[in-house]
Every structure is written in C-alpha cells, then in structure tokens.
Length: 220
Length: 248
Image (cartoon, rainbow over the protein chains, first blue to last red):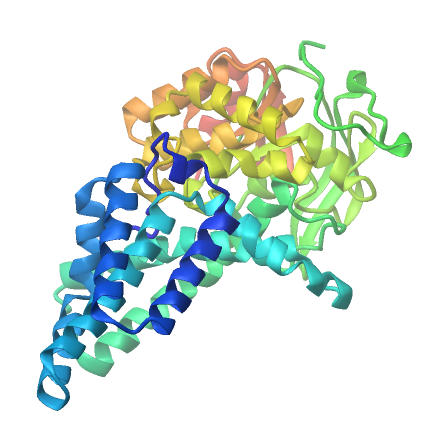
C-alpha cells in the first residue's frame, strides 16, 4: 500500500508551485460544473490526459490506476443516468468525474508531499491568531501519510501471527482480536515517535518527565 | 579527548554557548519511574570518541542513553553536554547530540526519503537551498540517492536504518547516541551499519547487545541494576559482562 504517489520528473508541471496546481484543479472543477455539457467534459478529460501524459510525462499506469479505482462508480453513474435520464447525460457525468479524478491524480503525482504540506501550512496561517501552530498541522498531515501504510503493515503482521497459531477469526471477533493488539502497538509507536520528534528538534518545550520506562526497560 | 568535530548547526543563544572540551558529564545521576529505581549514583565523564554501553534487558541502559540528549531528565543529579544542562538547555543539547533509535519505523516521520532527511534541518531553520544540498549530499553518501523520492515504508529494514541515521547525520551533531542500532538488522546490514558507525567523525555512544560492535571502541560501560558495574576498555568490560550474565 502506498499513499506517496509522487512521480519524479523534470517537467513544467512538476515545477509549478503546489498552490497554483491546486488552484487550477479547483478552477477546473468549477468550470466543469458551470459548463455542464458533454463536449466540455470530454475536452477537459482530453486536456488532463495531454497535461498528465505529454507535458508532465507521467507513466500511463499512474493515471490508469486512478481510473480503475473509480471504474465501478463511473459505470454506476452511466447506468443510472441511462435508465433515468439518457445515455448522453450519463456519459457527460461520468466523463466529468473521470476528468476531475485524473486531474487530481496529476496534481498528486507531480507534487511532493512537503510542497502540499507547505500549502496547508500557508492556508492555516491565520489560525496563528488563535494560538494554532500551522507547522504542527502540516506535520500531522505528513505523518498521517507516512504512518497509514505502517499501520496497515502492522495489522497484516498481527493477522499473520494469529494465522500462524491456527487463528482465523472472522467478522466482529476478527475486528476485536486485531484491533486490541494493534491499539497497543499504536500507543507504543506513538510514544516512540514522540521521542523521535523531540530528538529531531520538533519540540521547543522543555522535556517532559518520562512517566513510564523506556522500551528496553519495560520488560525485565 | 579524541572527538574531533564540534557541532556547527545553528547559532546558539548567548546563554547556550558550548564548551566542547567538557564532553558529556553525569553527576550523581539517578532516575526512577514511580517507586522503581532505574538508574542510581551515576558519575561519569565521557570524552572518548567511541563509548559502548552493554547490559541485560531492564538494566537501565536505554534510559541512560536517553539522558544524554535530554529525552529523559534525571530525577536526581545532572547531565551536561559540553557544559549545557539537559534540564535547562535542552534545545541546545539536542542540536549537539543526535539520537538514533532501535526501530527506524518510529523515527521516520515523513512519507518520502528526502523529505524525512530534510525534517531536522527544517526544525533548525536551515534555508531551503542549503537544506536541499545537505540532503542530497547525505543521501549520496549513504547510498540512498536513488531513493530520494521513494516512499519510506517501502525501503528494506537496512535501508530504513540508514535513512534514520542519515536523518540524524544531516543535522551535523557533535555527538551521536545509538540505541541498539543493529538489533533489527540481518548480518549484512548490521555489518554495514557497524562500518558506518566506525567511520563517523563524531563522538559516538552505542547501546548494544551485539558485543562485536564494540571492537575498536575506546571505552565500554557495563550497566546492571541501574549502576555502572564495569568501566573499562572493550576486552575487560566484555569479559566482565559475560561473567555477570553467566552467573544468572
């Protein structure tokens, strides 16, 4: 599982500031809803493909993966509209959604997480007035992207350990037997990560007194 | 005094001016968790380039390591690094003492390799251009240049540990503490990390269970029951540690 979708290339799209790309994405979404026609949706989709494949030089597989992820939604929209209105409207709605999904994929694949985080921090700048530190919000975003795959990996490891000992629980029991040990691991990891953040200079506050032993001291 | 390169990152405040000649000093250090005493009566001055710390599980060595950069504040006594007190000057101390954890997964906080290495520099306020140059240089040096934009969680265990070390080294600390840096690694990667540690210019303090990692060290401390029970060169210290463990 990967949430980091950045594809490094030396292209004009990659060099554009993250804020500009996000603004373009928002403008495209607004324009597609202000111009609700099939040619506009088809033109937007073609434009996104040109920008993504020719200008940004992304591998087609990157965009195909995103399209595959929403294919059933697109099909459902097409079918529902074909049954309730007409096929042309269904095609228009499906193409519009596909154009936006792929445009978002192009932005994601051409923008580093750190640039996205910088935009988030800029947008949160006014919150300084009420004592919020935008850098902390940016760090939270980055850490969420970093640790979701780690948690999925840990959950898989717990399930594998249970399976290795003959356990193959399903349903609610599976949830219970996985969630409890995962929660313990997450809390341990949260403690370790907070120490690592301290060690790397994230915390300007004085060090807190440890309330429980360091990991190696936890077990005799 | 064998350590060679004082820290260079950032401009210290007037009150945080370090005296590199003093090394790491522990005076009457004790630490307890509630009623449980983890460390007691530690008096040491560490100025050697390579210092090892060994001890059984629960002996207090990880807490000892965390004292050295202010992750843990002693409940009694004081710890100073180059004259800077970990209790009152912790930011300056952490700029001078890097810390590498046993599990790199807990230390890597950004999704991609280059971004994670840059993280500590951002905290130090290093300008973007210098940051990019230093990140590129350290990734090149540790064989991670080709992985700069890769998701960190897709790296191998050895690469993750190298990334964790790179994230500390890029901050150019004067001293580095390693808490069991090779415990989770296979033989090849453990040897690689050991070689990396051996080549560092900084003063290094390594907490480890892997005794061969201590070959060539200047000084080895054996910690047991919260006290330093042996303080010698690697040969006698490791022999004392083996004898201690054999009696259990």
